[in-house]
Image (cartoon, rainbow, N blue to C red; front, side):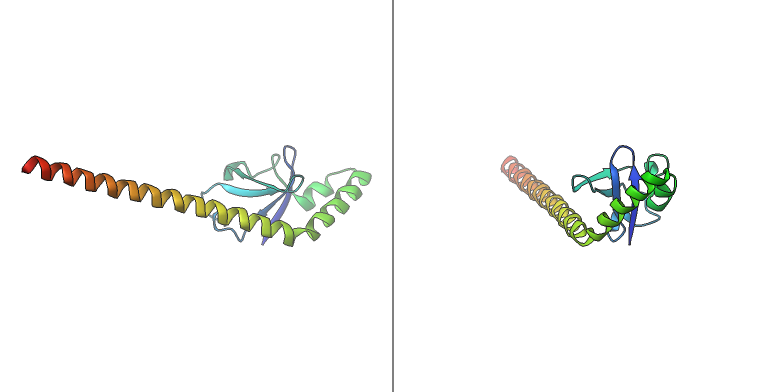
Length: 127
């Protein structure tokens, strides 16, 4: 459930398809994992095309022989680290969702408080 690729800007990247927003057929931005610094970043879905992003096997095939061998070895080493990468991606995704939920709860609380204050003011005016 991963798409591995190469980006001139980001180097080796992984798109974890188990993340709901990364599913096929959606319009949401994509959450990528950048291997060189173990960071996640968001990319517009429409940018996920060559030449900005190249499917890993196609990238390796397109290199000169010596570079291809080196890139292939690097790619295999990174794939071996996938369980660790996936845990990090999932943790960051969960933390982002928790932050978004906390913001939503805070906004709802503020809205209810404002509605209560408005009712108090209206009641005071009526008396």
